[in-house]
Length: 356
Ligand code: PMP
Image (cartoon, rainbow, N blue to C red; front, side):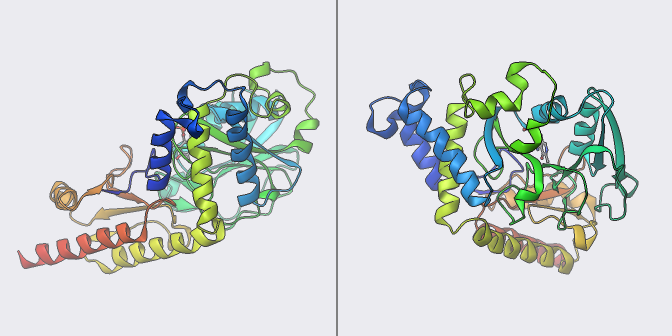
């Protein structure tokens, strides 16, 4: 299958094979990874290796701590302001789609939120360019890649307050200066493994300054102190993540995968722009390299094109239920050959329609 799902999404075959084997017999222990106690050496090694690989691949400095926590990115919409925003504080947010809107709503439970820029009036087809932040904002939150609308921040704005980023749909796909962020979070189920947990990368110096007491299980400082083992961690999700991180390292790391991601998305956008049947309405400079959205110029062909691609084992290209159209997610694990298959299907479909 050519799996273009937006998440949970395609994982490398090697990862699936190794994870399957470990479900039956983990590290030749005769036990499944699912039935191994979390405070045993082999599982603690998994937790440590996963965190160390994130640090290594993202070139993080010693101030940045890596946590694997229960729950998805949506949990982080709440946990970030719970830790960092208190009643009278202001947080600045960029509104670039459904996910950032949800993050904005959650932050409102904890403090004042100022939406400093929005592309809503442009149907979220662009990334805001000119905006100013309140000087006293505790942080500025942005969603680096907008999974539903197919836009991406290719330039991270240079701001004077700490940056917080939801990188759920482009983490590990593109090289950035990750040390410039106060906090980064991402659900694991796109570029980093399977669903059920998130990675949180936080500058510990920033947290040291927080005087507030919050529920211990929600407090990042406790998770740092206990090395992501404050309670029973999501062992299997972290294990799959560790295998995915090993796979990425063997591929040459972020800089190498970024080249392939660039090539995949360039090829697909070129075909959408060339093909008379399809259109992408996102501002060219803000197009996402991870989630490529496109529409048929004649909507009536939607089910016919869907069937045409299904026959070629192309899977998961329906657009998000709120956006319609099509979306091809080109995460790290998706090979270039799958993009070629999709492009060929688009070309053959164009010929078929034109011949009618
Ligand atoms: N942020 C972004 C950018 C997403 O794409 C998603 C899910 N697709 C979420 C947040 C929500 O993630 P979760 O379902 O893991 O809570």
